[in-house]
Length: 350
Image 1: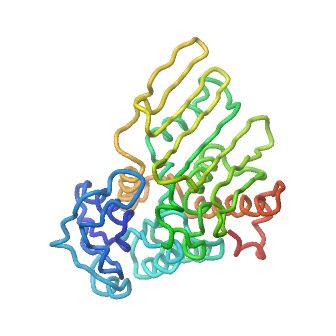
Image 2: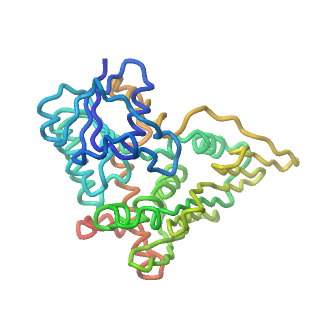
């Protein structure tokens, strides 16, 4: 039996609870959150993706308000880290040093130096650290990667990714909208597509980004072109400056030489393939969502070290590097090379 703890019990902590409880051979043995209201079942619908709604039964789960105490008192094999971003590095390092495997929510950390500190803790502990970049596991994104890599429809001509939300208005005054604690919109929202672009195409040579600030500071919206030194156009747009009735949107379009792939989360036919022969068809994908698949993958990895990683700590750190270059490009108003963020003096960027 795999004994798991969850650190942080807001929307994402509840999402992880739901996913862990669905797996056989797993016991959610402990939950930790410093805020006693986190366990109030009347305040559970907090996110923009379904799956964490409704009450949870914690009657047989040890409740803690302090991570150190939970690590000292509970016999655990692994933890999900779902606390605010500024606590990711501290919480992850503590759990690794306690001998636990760690699934830490994205982004890896607020900056490259903290991310490197997490990687060094993995190397010392010889435990598994997986960062929760769930788009690498989202069924429609997984299918798109399979089709692109198979090459049946030729090379990619253009790929656009879009992710829009009303977070700034819905969560004003909370930690999400405080850049010192969340990293702001680029690290909280846009990095989903930055990481998937990285996963699909590899590390770009450079980025050209443009941003629009919010009235109270910080980027509310940004768009980036990723340069791979070839002819394809790869663009990702993200923003959380929408008004609450807008809700949430994530979608992509991938133009291949002989087909087009397009996905829209809220459309009845979510993933569609349109071919040069004039046919359009729905592509059937595996059920579930990226959260459930990433947690099932993590459980397999810590149970069998021969399971190849879909995302390594170095992968997550490199996605932070790309995002650091994007923010620098938006600030300067010009193209920025990724290799600028390999040097020691750039380690604190993001």
